[in-house]
Length: 441
Image 1: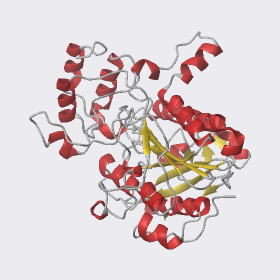
Image 2: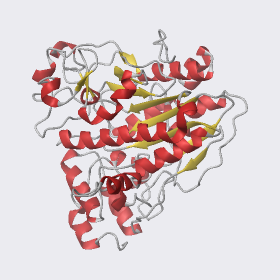
Image 3: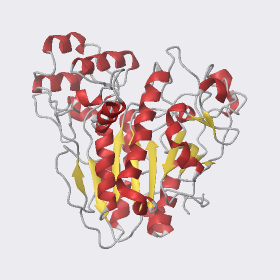
């Protein structure tokens, strides 16, 4: 075992490891692609099923307070910031309010992929990144962002740092891309890897135990970047020690870099600690590349699987997202930012009601966040379905009213001039884009 992780302490807790591997703090690559246009697109996958009803609280809906006592008390009591009389922004996203005021931040609520009912992180993320109607129609072969690049002439791979273990499914395909990921400072032994493969699965009861095991290594299991989800066939398909091609347990984030600075530090020390956070490094690097020839960037953030204690963990995750967006803006500079659109997407939403542990469970519809100088923002888009029991999906989840893929397609049509038929048949097979939501200036 590595010197950073005490074997006895790890094994003592290993029987309880089971938090979603798809939301775990393993290394994800950042994928880039250069292209023959000036507009930029950044896609951020929020792994773990981000709660759209917490990101963007529908406090103006009369049924919200009954579903979530406390969160529905009103904007003055919670610190959330009113956007339009119906929705309020989570307090942790307050640093982004100036962007909203300038029209450089917006949201789409009550959206989802075609995925329904089974609520698996693994399948949900595969479907989100494949951009297909179902898992049988292409998931695992290529991703929608790569298929988009396949229809643009003159694509060249950007020179990057080949440090990551694997590429995102979102960017997987025949179009040229290059991968980069942060330095890996913590490695598990093969024995620990095989153990983790066997015991990690979607079970909220085991979530804290996994987090505790990560804390033993000196950091925060909720922080930083997320890996591509490991498929079950990779976990159990080769018990002789030969891991499948998608396995990514070989490296983890430097855990010390994930920990929040303790109280009493100076502002300079706190800012230095922030700059050492993995998400901050990724955003700064991506911004620098986008300032040059790079036109597409895609990466993941985790910490969104909020089965319990959501008030604390959601604030931390949204703080990282806020810092990521602002770091991207500052790193790429004004001219590039004015030609940039950022879209943050998640595999599915969460239950409309709090559960008994102060969290939410896997749901259906959620929200997408949009940012950038090219955005026609300062709005909350979407057809709000309401929160009465009869309005909920399966009487438990926010009802999806539009396909999240449609908004991604309209972004690419506006940014890159792709034909609608190409988007509906090749990039997102089976999609009906519907009306133009006017996402861009």
